[in-house]
Image (cartoon, rainbow, N blue to C red; front, side, top):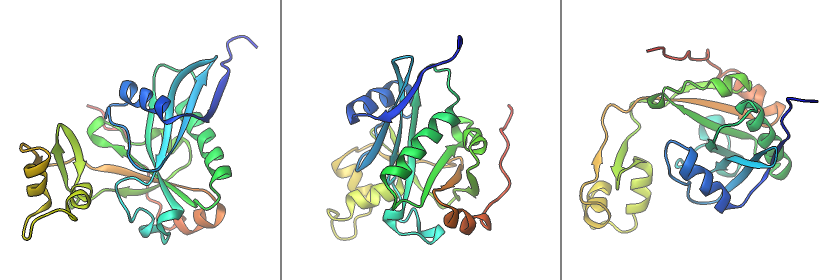
Length: 215
């Protein structure tokens, strides 16, 4: 049929995912640690990646009654110009993740209001909205990259001198100009249950979807 797009979504190399993230994601930063990388091709052309990982929060699954290995985060969606709806692309990766990782019961993702994101792609995909990150979340600017306070703490804790704080260690050893960010916009939190049992459990946590802010 004319006008259709031949879509392929499949696991890809970390190098291919990095290529997409550095060019097509607003953060320009590749996630660290153990990740699952999926490539996206339209009509034979590589158009981006979708990446899942553990994220910066070691207790990602705790609010949902899940252990660390039972919950992952959708950490990057990095796409150039494409014809397929993003929701359809993510759905394809979720099906493959479910098949390859049956022990994963929940996927969590965040929509950054600082980028004027409200989570429309998750709403279209029937994800559950569970609220937004609170003002207690702390971020630092380290070597020009916005870094979560938990990451600063985990990096520095084994190496800090007695009485030294995490940001003091960062300034001493990594970036002397590192500083704490203030007035951080909230991130909307969405959850995608990978099975019916988890979806039933999360239904009581569901909140009304936020709307896009029109400026």
